[in-house]
Amino acid sequence: MKHFIVGPVELYPFTKDIYNKDYFYFRTEEFGNMVKENMNRTSKLLNNNVENSLIYLTASGTAAMEAVIENCIANNDKALVINGGTFGKRFCELLKHHNAAYDSINLAWDEKLEWAHLLPYAQKGYTTLFVNLHETSTGQLYDIKILSDFCKENGMYLVVDAISTFLADDYDMEKYGIDVTIVSSQKGFCMSPGLSFISFSQRMKDKVLNNDFVKSQYFDFKDYFKNIERGQTPYTPAVFIMYELKAVLDYIDKIGGKDALLKIIEEKCIHFRKLAKENGLAFPEKYPLSNMLTPIICNDIKAGELVKHLRDKYELCVNPCGGALADKMFRVSHIGNTTVEDFDDLIEKIMLSINEIKNKEFAYDR
Ligand SMILES: *Cc1c(COP(=O)(O)O)cnc(C)c1O
Image 1: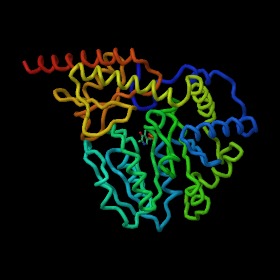
Image 2: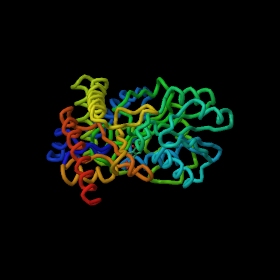
Image 3: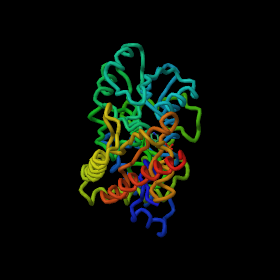
Image 4: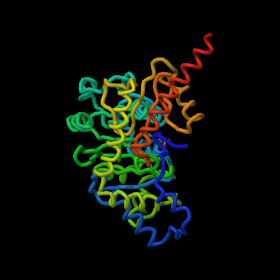
């Protein structure tokens, strides 16, 4: 089975090898030093130069989203959420669950986020903006520049779930004054699922260190900040994924750094979109897309059926869409250990599958 899904993605062979090796006990200086180095190198990739400002949780990305709400939102805060799909909706649900005051800017699935959407919320006492910069459910990559400008003009904190854009598109915390970035292991990092990472600006780190409103014990960031100074966590981490991280960071260095990695993904992305167009396939053009994935719109067959057919007959796994988009669209991811040639094969099999499904329906009709 070959995976063209958003995560977990096709792993690099060198990360799989890690599981055959011995590991060393994690409450040691040796492990702590490796963690500290990994955290520093990851902070550089995020362009965040605040010292000891990156912590990690043994938990999936959603847990990190929830823990950020728990640790960064106080009683007197008022949040604003960009809700353009499944993941924006998740931020809303989590804020509601935590009894936090919030409003959301709700976008139709194919509606591009513009400055005009934000304007009605200016100078209304909102303290924190939450956004999934790449809304993975539709492929829309929001404009970080307008979000950043809006937060600066309104004195707001900017919290970014960058889980599906970091290491697929360009990303820069300092340049855009981003206060919190959430990423997780199974997306752009191309590692096993299980770790999530949270990077803070100085002012948000200070707010977290001084808060007294956190009810969760396991997810109290104050403990994580204290421990990360010596490369440790309050509780047992997913040790092996920390080794995967070192291997992936070494790989990124070896191929020439972050830009070289982004280029590899962009090549696959451009190649696939060109082939898709040549074959008469449609993808959304009203909003900017992340390089991480391409959504394909199905007009004359059900997208969900195509996804199943590709998996059952050709052992190719692409992402279905959820909810109202399930029959309309599917998504093809460009991250992970795949090659340009893999996308040649994928397009060929998508076109075959469409014909096979149509012919089957035709046979039923008769
Ligand atoms: C994948 C993803 C998540 C995290 O989902 P988990 O299943 O909890 O790891 C969160 N936000 C976005 C934008 C994602 O793409």
